[in-house]
Length: 96
Image 1 (spheres, rainbow, N blue to C red):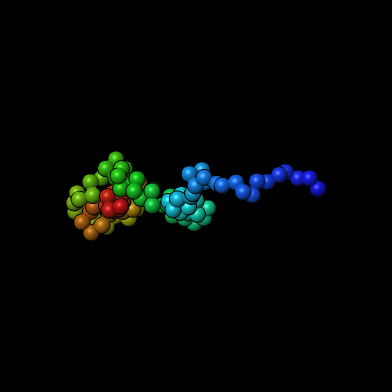
Image 2: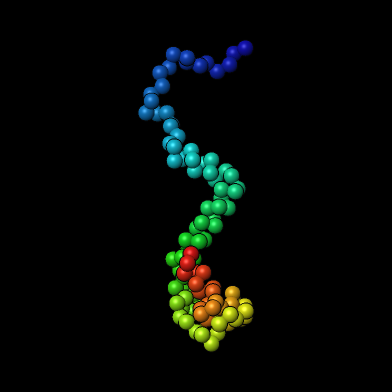
């Protein structure tokens, strides 16, 4: 059999070898797991909600409205109001 000739005495230059870094290895392993990717998406979503809370919140989270105490969920207050009449959705968005 005559196959390709291999030079077994060839010296490999260490600078030419590709060494995988720890960060790249971690990222490759992390992204290969669906649960890890889902967790990363949830964390990124929470960060975005926290950053854009002033734009997303329909009401001031600290505004007290005694006349609207303990309202159930409605089109005006999606998650209702608390004991001081504050909008629960706005408070959750700011708390994130």
